[in-house]
Amino acid sequence: MDLKQLYQDIILEHGKSPRNFGICKEFTHQAKGYNPLCGDKVHVYLKLNKEKKVENLTFEGSGCAISMASTSIMTESVKGKSLETAKEIVIDFLNMIKKTQEIKSNNLDEDQKIKIMSLSGVTQYPMRVKCATLAWHTLTSAIEGNKDEINSEATD
Amino acid sequence: MDINNIKNQFPIFSKKVNGKSLVYLDSSNSAQKPINVITCLDNFYKNEFSNVGRSIHALAVNATNKFEETRMSIKNFINASSKDEIIFTKNATEAINLVASTFGQQYINKGDEILITELEHHSNYVPWHYLRENKGAIIKFAPINDDGDIILDKLKELITSKTKIIAITHLSNVTGTIVPIKEIVEIARKKNIPVLVDGCQSAPHLKIDVKDLDCDFYAISGHKVYGPTGVGVLYAKKKWLEKLPPYIGGGGMISEVKKDKITYAGLPEKYEAGTMATAEIVAFNESIKFMESVGIDNLIKHEKELTNYALEKLKRINSVNLVGNPKEKAGVISFTIKGIHPHDISTIVDEEGVAIRAGHHCCQILHARLNLLATARASIGVYNTKEDIDILCSAIEKCRKIFDLK
Image (cartoon, rainbow over all chains, first blue to last red; front, side, top):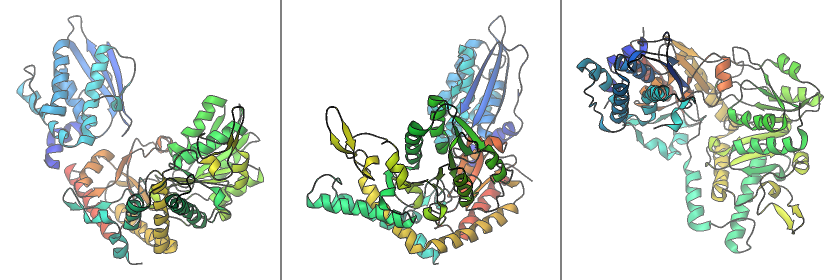
């Protein structure tokens, strides 16, 4: 494992130009996440339609390249999926980061899988795992309607 | 000063980190330990261990003597008037909490004001916040300018008849600002307000003379002065230690205990309840001896040269922004790189064996004041060399390359 694998082009590019950045119109769910160790902040906005499908998913926040890229890739991967599928993708991602280094989900196309897999190198950098997982925990919190801010020190 | 001789006294520098020689630039966080400190800890546990101040057997007498020798060394190191003014705590944070708690209990009432500054570490803010929560005290922040210097005129304006104590750092752990403590104490004296100085960062890097500063309290962290963890020091003028109530209650701090009455021990035992970090306090004496063997004037000169060298080199790297530009600066160099988050900087330079810190460095108030979320910080210790700074700068160039900065 070297730094080139951690800072792949996909990550650098998403880190610099995150997708789905901003507040989405008519969001139905939202949650905040905070990493007190590094000050990273993320605010996730989710719009579920009547069929329980993720019509839109956006975020605002600031942080390192890993956290920005991870959040950006998350919004791309989950947008358009059913709520149940979205939950599966989150679990799959967290398993990849913490254990398997592989993404199993059949719910993602090859391009999305490659993007998510680009984050798997973080596993080798224990101090950076929370940078990658913050947004995903925050999305879960938004889905579950939790009012408290997600604190990375209290998760993982 | 023979820098190689100094570096050789620190065993950690013979180790490799990520396959590279260690470039340790995180001494503001905690300093590495010279061999005499490590050997002393080892020897004390192997050959001399006993609790102190209680039993009268030979080991206890020897351990007590050594424990008190450290107190004497610190008294001399900071030029206190008496060894009774030196209280051992578990760290500088506890030293500040001791003052906030006991002084607060006795002298702070609803509406009273505590004056701190925007430079303070959380450990010189949170303990005072308890008094805001529990007693209705008011905390005021003396502002800094964009260079990271405290604006003394504004500080003066914030002093009122309600100001009960001023608590202030001697050296900022973010901007490296050396605060003119003597001047601030003179301002406070005119109004009869006591001054607590957070000396965590200054004790390893400046000459400390509490008589000359004339401050009322001075907090020191052992592990930042090349000593063991688990040891802090509170210097306090004797008149305060006599007047203030005890802090933690228990064994060792009492004189007589009856069912209806307890009297407390004299100084310094009144503030040292329970078994202390005995071995660490004994070994702390060795770090004072190490500092004295280097010579504080040599140390200041070496670190000053290195700081100037680092500042000049960093300034020349495109997109590096130095945080603060105080009138007097010690070897604490915080910086940002436009387009790279400090945590990414830290991870990348770590691959080159360079240990720096990234984040808010326990100074969220200061970061908010400077409109920064996080900074990268390289902090210099007595063992650092120009080569270390060169390696840091090449590692920063590597960050710029990975992130494709122009």
